[in-house]
Structures are given as C-alpha cells and as structure tokens.
Image (cartoon, rainbow, N blue to C red; front, side, top):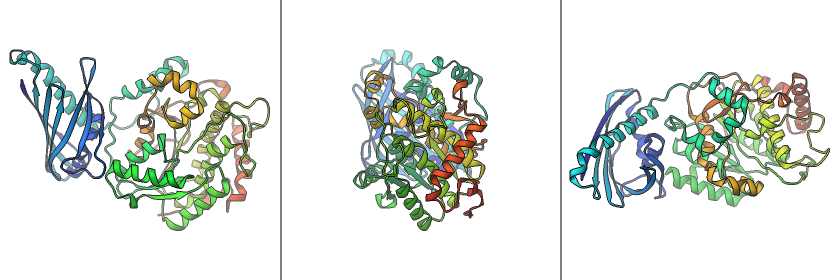
Length: 479
C-alpha cells in the first residue's frame, strides 16, 4: 500500500536556521513523537549518502529503519530514503522563504507498507494522517519554542516537596515526558569552555554544542582521551577537529587549574559559556597533593576557582552553568568539616555535600559578576562515572536510567536558549524547568553558614588568585 502524507507549516525563523536544524536528519528524534531514537551513523559532514539509524514507535513496538540522504540543496530541499522490514519511506522537506524572518516548510512523506493489503488502506489512512500532523506540530514547536517558565510549576513544586512522586522522573521517563526536546537555537561563534568532556555528560553536551555551531574549548586531564573526544565530536557534528581547542589540566589540582585559567585568559578574549561539568565520586577518602579531600577539590574548589579566575572574560551575555547533583536534595553542608575529616567517610554524602556547596557558591559568585549563573542536575544518567562509582545502583537501575544525551540536555538548553534571565541561585534546573533547590528543611543553608562557606573558599583559594572572591566584581570586563 502507498500512502502520501503532506503537511505545511510557516514558522517565525529565518530559512537558514530552519535548514541547518533539519540538515542533520537525526534531529527528527527531537521533534517527531513517533521516533524513539535516531542517530547519524556516517561520520563527518552531512552529504548525499549520509546514513541514519531511526527507530520508530509503532503499536508498542520499536521498528528500526535505515535512512539515507539522496539529495540536498541548501535552504531549498532535503530528500531521504528510509527502509524498514516490510515498509519504506521517501521523505522530502522543502523550504521557502516567506520573508527574512519567516519560512514555509513542506513536509512530504511517501510511505510504502508492503505488509498492508490495499483493501485496508482506507482504514489506515486516518491513523497515518494523525502521525503526520503530530510530526509537523512537533517541528513547529521545535522551531518556535515557548519561553521558559519564570518559576517552578506548582505540580513540580509539590512533587519535589513530597520527594517520592518526583523520583521516577529522575530516570529516562522524565526526559521522554518533555513536550519539546528540540535544540534548535544556533550558537555560531560563541566560545564555550567545558570541563570533563571525554565521556558521559560532558561528551554528550560537547557533541550537541558543536552541532549547534559553538566554538569549543575542552578542559580535561588525559591528553589521549581529549584527542579522542575531539575526533568523536567532530565526527558527530560534521566539523573539522582542528577547530576544537583542548587544554590539558588535572582538575583535582588547584595549581593546575589556575595555570589553565591563566592560559585561557592569555589566549581568548572572552568566554560566552562556561560549563563546569567535571565531577567525581570516590568510595574512600583520599587527599590531593595539595591536601584537599578529592571529591571536594573536583566538585567544589575547581569550579569556583575557574569561575573566579575567568571572571575578566565573562560579560553580561555570558552564562555559567554549574552541573550539580539531585543528591544534594538529601544533603546540607557542614561548614565545620568541609574536608570530611570527621567520622566515617561516605563517598555519596561527600559528593552531594560538595555539590550543595557549589550551588550556594554559585549565588555568591553571581553577585559579583555580569554573567548569568545557572545550576542544573542531570537526573539519574547511565554514565561511565556512575557505573564506576555506584556499580550496584547502576546495575539495578540501568533499565530506568537516562543515557548521557538525556542527562546533558538541560545543560545544552541552558547554554543555547536566548533570553534566560533568572535571579542567581534561586532555582535548581532539571529537564529545562526551574525547581526548588531545597525540599528538606534540614538541608537548607543558613545565611550564617553561607557566609562561613564564602570566607572558607576565599581563604582556601586565595593562594591561586590575584584577588579574593569578594573582589571578583571589580576585575576588568570583556565588552
């Protein structure tokens, strides 16, 4: 049976934006609710012959399809052929500029369902038409996303306060419930510095940011893995790996981090987005060569040091995104034992404490900066770090966990979405929405403890700074 679906939309986006978003057909996962998963399997730039793996949802089943680009004319037309078991599709996207800022998109899908007898075509047509309308509606939402919420929704606030109702959404289910998963705002020419890029959330975020056109500066401790991730990102985004800068630095060392920051200040005029993604959880207490508990050094001291040292490169349009953890909902901070020297060491608690302290420090840093600060957590993601640090949790929960791409989504969305202006530190971002950062009163950080934390950070980091935390607002700015 042959069935032709045609839908047309007009969106308030320039034709170049529309074409570049749809040029990589794997973005269909972001806007077509009938697609479970999609990925570009041909490395490098998109061109005729580029192949994609697209998994379709149908009647409770996942049906794999192999797509191949047949032809493309920039800003005019893209045509692809898809083949599945017993069915095929010829998809055509046609672009017409209505004005400089408005584009008409015609989506045409020619379906061949070999297994469906022609007598049943009349029964199938309404169902297939609904699928086409849902797809084109999703594309409209992707290209014309609604503004972000200004404050937590009452349902989110209630679920967060009750804790248990919110937990299932920490897994993949929460991401799949998002009404709009699109990342369609271009970042061409924007300098993005990201720590911990070689695997997990950092690698997934770097790939998406590169696909959006960002100029990446990647900071990590293993040179071989940095080189490999640079090639992986280039293959995914279709860019030249030479255009991705990498900086080798041991992020558990404050001296190494300070030296890397000095290098960045010397070689880059500005930073548009800083993503402090690097993090680590350890099952036993260890100290760095500088005498700091390792989890504290990686998860708190290094991000705060980077933010402070790089303040001269930040400007009023810059964003700082600190990746924390949902585990902080269960932990406060102990300003009398920041280095976790007392009692039995618990790696998960030490990690969550450091992330809670980073959330508090983010508000303090934002007070002296023109940049916008955001804290987000990824939910429960199946990353190499989780498998290594929490093997039992990872094994038991793997069917429910997010993949790295889902976990990194909010960080990329915060980095790329225009016109996000929120009071610093007021919210913890998750699944593109603001949430309360404290739901258990005992984990709240008092003004007194916040002030003690700030003085402790100032004293601890001062040897690596030209000025203390209290003076960051007076440093030179980049226009």
